[in-house]
Amino acid sequence: MELLVEKCVSSGGGNMSPGDALRRVFEALASGILLPGGPGLFDPCEKEPTDEAATLTNQEREDITASAQHALRLIAFRQIHKVLGMEPLPQQPKHPRGGAKTPQNNPRKRRRTNSNGEGTEDVDGKKDKKEGEEVAETTETNQVLKV
Image 1 (cartoon, rainbow, N blue to C red):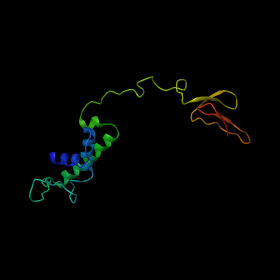
Image 2 (image 1 turned 180 degrees about the vertical axis):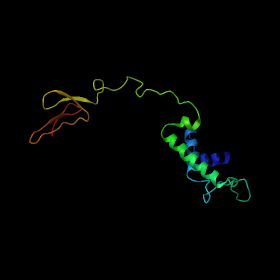
Image 3 (image 1 turned 135 degrees about the vertical axis):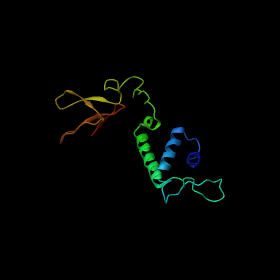
Image 4 (image 1 turned 60 degrees about the vertical axis):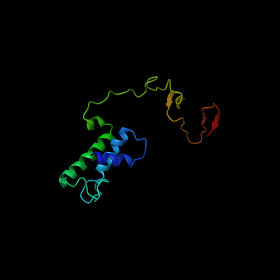
């Protein structure tokens, strides 16, 4: 295990976070490094090239590979607590300052009127143009453009 982790972390470059290192180890296992016919795990301290995982059966190698693939899926879907066997951390609010953005306090959205003259919400800053009709649109710098 130590040899596997050392090879994965050292080949990844410097300044790797613990989470990135864990993911890299699972990626190496999930890619089939231990499978028969795979690259294997060779110890640089031995004179003769010997696969350190040679004592594993083919079924054990496949089980480890499948488990690593499952762990990667869990990590990708933000469920690392299941991989680590711990309780999930408490959820943090999405907008810790100022609460959720509403049309009233969001400066990027602006109100517009529809063809009935009623106020509607403008999501992307564009107005619908009817055939043969010119529509004036106000930009963020309060200049009027003819479309």
